Amino acid sequence: MEDIKAYIESGILELYVLGDVTPDEKARVEEMAAKHPAIKAELDEIERSMEAYARENAVAPADDLRERILNSLVTNYGDDSTFDKEMQETGAKVVPMVQPKTYNFYKYAFAACLVLLLASVAALISTYNKLQDSNVQIASLQSSNSKFAKIVNLKLGELQVYQDASFKFLKLQGTAKSPQSQMTVAWSPARKKVWIDLHTLDVPANDNAHQYQLWALVGNKPVSLGVFDKTAADTSDMKEMQSTASADAFAVTLEPNGGSKSPTMDQMVVIGKF
Amino acid sequence: MSKKRKITLSEEELVLALRNREKIAIEALYDMYSSSLYGVISRIITETATAEDLLQETFVKIWHSFSAYSAEKGRLFTWMVNIARNLAIDKVRSKDFKNQNKNQDIENNVTFVDEQKNTVYNPELLGIKDLVGKLKPDQKAIVELVYFKGYTHVEAADELGIPLGTIKTRLRMAIMQLRTHFN
Image 1: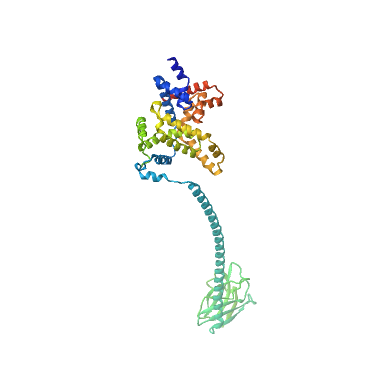
Image 2: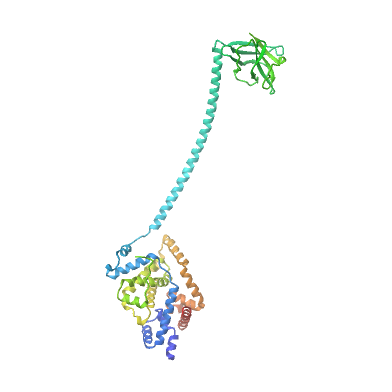
């Protein structure tokens, strides 16, 4: 009995369970275990604890390994017909290196997309700038076009004055207040139109608070035909005034801004009679 | 067939079924023991692809040489785990494996490192460290060498500079500790 205890405590049984014994030792352990139930029981306990230890430290292999290994056993099994077909077919699944390739493909595709995106943005910006330039040009062309259209209309109106035989031209002479002044008025009784020639207008320039006002004398009664300015930089050739069908004389007075209801007689600069 | 379905038999039923070469025995064997066996193998061989190949080899060998197993001499798992350990240790010591490790190119190393990471984060691995942590440091050193690194007790004695007798006693003490833990 002492022998058995010493044998157990030598640690040989543990090594036996771990497979770390020589063939001689192995035979001896098996012989002792067969002879002594105590040794057999001890061996069994060691085995159980190592098995539990292994289970505690288990690492689950990858899921697809199950198929692979079971199939490799099937090939060794001999009688394949007892296994379902599905299992054998999936056994030959080979998927090497697919992942790195797709990974590379997406990497390059992503890089290409990025380059395209940058190029597109650059193109968009340059196109946008050109568009802005064009819009500015169009705006300036439109404004000069309408300016020209206005001028052409004005000139056509002026031309009409000279072409139309019904227009009468009257030269207004300076009064005592301003003997040097003179002005030309074109009037068509038939068309009831009155134009003044600003080009040949020769009166003192008015200030900001005053404007010149044109009057028609109809039977000694003054009728206002509107106001105009004389400025140093005035380039307009002619200006159409309010219409009148009849007039005995025309006169111009200097009035407060916007004109007056009746002429201020002592501010009269020019007058002319038919 | 469903992957989720796991087959469990008693050890006696399984041994009988294996002996009769029944197809259900293969699946039951895998479902019951693959994780425990892979736990041992993957600690000796850290590279996943090789460890997986070895698990396959282990099952093939178990299946082929099952007639050599005798229930009178010990438990089924003891017999199987020794097959797995021997295959793994042979692999580690083979010229082929050493060269293979030297010649890994950069691209393979990337996945290799990734795979190792997975192993590190495997929650099942956390368990071992806890358990081994409960052992005394000298017991722990022996269990790590013999169990995790596949050393023989003679090599472990050499490595630790301890007499053979002491190694055996400490290993016994360590396993006694595990026995009290599990029983």
